[in-house]
Image (cartoon, rainbow, N blue to C red):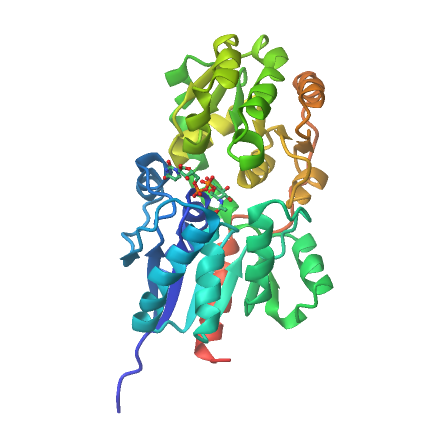
Length: 373
Ligand code: UD1
C-alpha cells in the first residue's frame, strides 16, 4: 500500500497588499497535517520596500517559485504572469490554488489555473466599486467569475456575488484576513514609536498615501489634491510615504511647486509593514486612495478620508471610521477640516473582522482537498 501524499495548496502573492493577506493563510496551512502549501511570488512588486521588507516583517517563507515579472502595461504584466505561472502549475499539480485581492497577478493566475482545470479559491471575493475605470474592478469581477471558492470579507460581498448569479454553495463569508495580520502585529508596531523618527507626536499628525493612476498620473491632478491639504498641513504635519509610482511624479513642476510650498507635508519612502502600521495606529487622521488602508483604519478606530469617488469596501463607511471625500480639491479641503474637528465616532466594527479569518479559510480548504470536487 502506498502512503498518501500531502495535498498541495498553491498560494499566490504578487504585490504589497497581497503579502499581508497570504501571511496568516500560509501559517495556518503549514500547521495542518496532510497539507503542503506551495508559495509563489509573481514579482509584480520587487523593490525592497515594496516586497522584501514585507517578507521580513511578516516572517513570510522564501517563495518556492519567484516569477520575476516586474512592471509593464496591464497587458504586458498580466501576460508575463500567465506565461511564467503556467509551467509552475504544470509541474506542481496543486489540488487547489489560492489568490488574494484584486491586483493583476490575482487575475493572471486565476485565469491560468482555471484553464488547466485547477480549482481556484479567491480570498477577498465579492467586493465591488461598480467603477469599471478601475483596473482592480475588472480584476475582481473576472477572478470571481472563474473561482470555485469565494471567500468574502463582508456580507455586501455575498450580496454582490449572489446578484451576479454565483451559486450560494461557492460563497463563504469568512471575514477579513488582513485584520488577522494587523491584530497579530499591532502591539509590536505601536511599541516601535516610529512617529518619533519623523519628529512627530502621537495623535498629532496626519498620514497621506496616494498611488491610484487616476490620482497620481496627471501632475495637475496630483498637484491639485496635494494643494487641497494645505488647511491640514498648517494645523499638523502630514507624513506622506510615497509609492514608487507617485514618487516618479513628485519632481514634476506642477507637483514640486506645491510640495515645496507646504512645509507641513513631509514626503518619505514607502514604509515596511510594522512601521506603517505603527504610524497609522497613532495618527489623528489618515487620507488615502488605498483599499486596504480604509480597512486598517476601521480596525484601528482611526478616522480615514478616502480620496476617491467610490469604495468597494462600503462596510468601512457604514460600520467603520471611513468617509468618502471624493477627488475634488475643494471638497477634500472641506472634509479634511471637518474631520480634524470632529470627535471619533463610536463604531461597532464589521462582523468577523476578529483576527481568525485565516483559520476559517484553511479549514474550508482542507475539507476541499480531502473530498475532491
Ligand atoms: C498595484 C495594484 C493596486 C494595488 C497596488 C499596491 C494592479 C492593477 N494594481 O498597483 O491594485 O493597490 O499595487 O501598491 O495590480 N514600481 C516600482 N517598484 C515596485 C513596483 C512598482 O518602482 O516594486 C513602479 C513601477 O514604475 C510600476 C509602477 O510602480 O510601473 C506601478 O506598479 P504596478 O505593479 O503596475 O501597479 P501599482 O500602482 O503598484
